[in-house]
Image 1 (spheres, protein in one colour):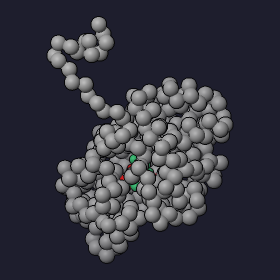
Image 2: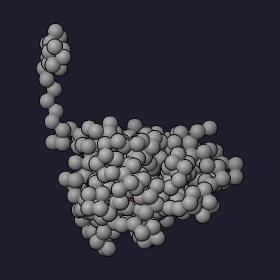
Image 3: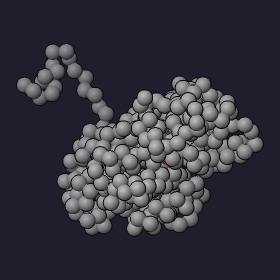
Image 4: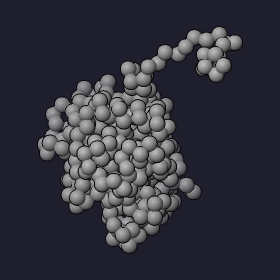
Length: 348
Ligand code: F0G
């Protein structure tokens, strides 16, 4: 069997006799990013989480959450989402034969993610509010009705998301010096830190990386140290004003001698284009936040040259085709006669 529960049976527990619900998540590429390494004087790797079955890192947590939900006997799951959690929950619930309800902020989720929830047959409720409002509604519903909440406030989900840190250490043969992540609701940075510290405590690695968490400038509560009432950013996946895993993120930063920093949408889009054009890796805008942060902190010397750095790129570029086509890339397909292809390409 494939998937992270099969890959790490001693570290990810599921209920005795439970049917494991997996779509073959995990074992994603850790790519040596040659151009970024050259730019920063570091050895930079990209952990490409868009290669998961539904195109984001959420699948690592969802296999565990849905496996537990199925074993509990309840017939429905619910989540709030900026799009990726809902895409993942919809797919894993479909596989498990569970009903899935998703609460999403109206007009603020990328097209590909909405298409996934539709295709997998989720009940989609759009809320006139932001992600934080959706999460509050989802939490309340799960308290009052027999439905399992599969957001990362359900700690079971984060147990699965630790696996990305283990894969990185297993492949590098050590922990990186620095790990850069985009931060929204802050579950992932919490989970990575748990994974890294667990490996170090068990003697699998000699140490843990410094955790660098990057937020979009218009949605940077952890950077400001207080919630943001009206978060705004082109990186809709991390448009979160009041992260649920606030404490976990601060612990990861403080215990690792890390940092939180904001990057502007402009820098996020620069990194987004650079990843696609120079590294061959097409990500959604939120994912590029880690790389925008890497470039900013390497440029002013906060990342020592020679460091081994891993940037997680969290979701696939196909999730958000509108951003790829609107303004960020000049799309002017050239009209060409069948006999003139070589000439148009300046091959003759
Ligand atoms: N990158 C992507 C592509 C995401 O979808 C998210 C979160 C993050 C980064 C941030 O991770 O929340 O653990 O700090 N997306 C959530 C969702 C909020 O609903 O799909 P985080």
